[in-house]
Amino acid sequence: MNIKLNDNFDNVKESYLFSEIAKRVNKYSAEHPEAKIIRLGIGDCTLPLTKTVIDAMHKAVDEMGVKETFRGYPPEYGYDFLREAISKYYASNGVDVAADEIFVSDGAKSDCGNIVDILGDNTILIPDPVYPVYMDSNIMSGRKIELISGNQENGFLPMPNGLEVKPYVIYICSPNNPTGATYNKEQLGEWIAFAKKSGSLIIFDSAYEAFIKGDYPHSIYAVEGARECVIEICSFSKMAGFTGTRCSWTVFPKELEVNGKSVQKMWARRQATKFNGVPYVIQRAAEAALSPEGVKEAMANIDYYMSNGKLIGELLKEKGVWFSGGVCSPYIWLKCPNNMKSWDFFDMLLEKVQVVGTPGAGFGDEGEGYFRLTSFGSREATIEAIERLKTIL
Ligand code: PLP
Image (cartoon, rainbow, N blue to C red; front, side, top):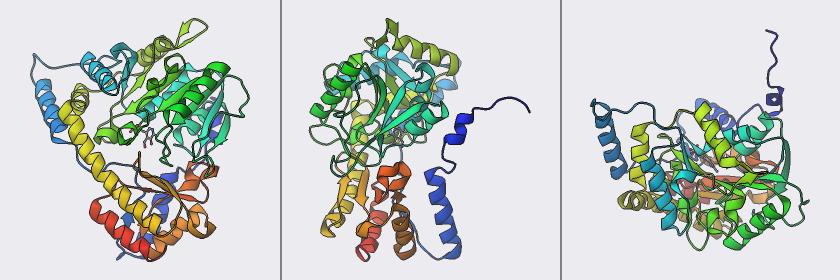
């Protein structure tokens, strides 16, 4: 063929972090078939969908089988019932977001990746370490990327001071994957002030907001001025165990404008052209997840995960290992003992105690020397992993 391909893909790292982990774990399993491996590396929910969600799905499935209630293509931006439910969810956190500013989607990952469609050739500012999708999707589009360092000194919460004042597209993930670090209201206020001063746009990923405990904003729109400079992306995945069910949303406030052009209208046009909406059954399930009973059940699951995180945190404290996270997020981010590199620590844990985690280096250069454990495992597996880790930390 003589067509031109998108050569920017040559600049994306070949191996995705989780395939490299799978490769190493599979090799170890093949060599040690008797080994009982515990996976504390997964960023995926393990508890089933809750009763309220399942009941709503069943009901919606039945509706699809009856002529009078059958639904065809869903609206591209989401059914009104779900957009209203999300708007009310914001209101329950004291935040005002109108239903028609909410665009329902099949995943925060899709929206994080697709947002580049409506943005021009800007300088992209990305924290390091962070969820790799921001970086890779911008590399695929040939964007110029600048990294801002998260490190132990700044609590893995990079701030804008010292940045050149020019327009950027800034990604912020809070609570952060992988570090669990969470910005408070003042810190988010500083980012908003910087965005306004520099004419920048913030893309705020709040996929883990439901895990927040304590005095941290669940939405950046709780901070004054955010409506003029922030797109917020959120998901049912971690909140309600929808990782396999697929539903999320993105907020485009009406105030977002560039030279009089509405960013919301551009996203609406993009979605209407390239996306045919989320299935009715799934949107009914998502609506149920935001009902009072649904939220109660989701919180019970989150508490279960967080208790695992607490146990891991207690072990690390006892062993004098530095870590962050585990309070507002399912992730525990620890410094590898004895200045080990991330992948060396990964190999050591696999070989000595058959516990699998995620090497911090996979989330950016600043993650080198760190390691991510998650609280998404079962209680039994987490306790057994802790017993094993005790012997080598
Ligand atoms: N954003 C962050 C920070 C994540 O960690 C993840 C998944 O791990 C996602 C987005 C993806 O969410 P979704 O399942 O809605 O695509």
